[in-house]
Length: 65
Image 1 (cartoon, rainbow, N blue to C red):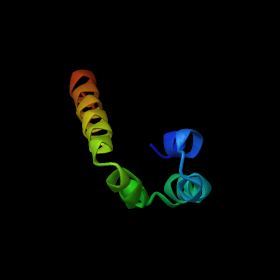
Image 2 (cartoon, rainbow, N blue to C red; image 1 turned 180 degrees about the vertical axis):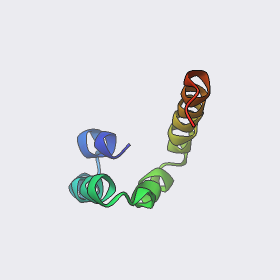
Image 3 (cartoon, rainbow, N blue to C red; image 1 turned 30 degrees about the vertical axis):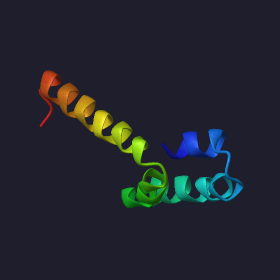
């Protein structure tokens, strides 16, 4: 999500702030950092929902704990 906003965003302020959010998300593990980016465009809410569905299905199929 954050990489897509960084690369494809038309808004310069969003494009400039995304790399900092990526660093916080990756090294700090603070996943809530991407919520404002999702809420900027409500249709984007579908992406993390589908990502979580795929992750849960994968874990269930592979027998992960």
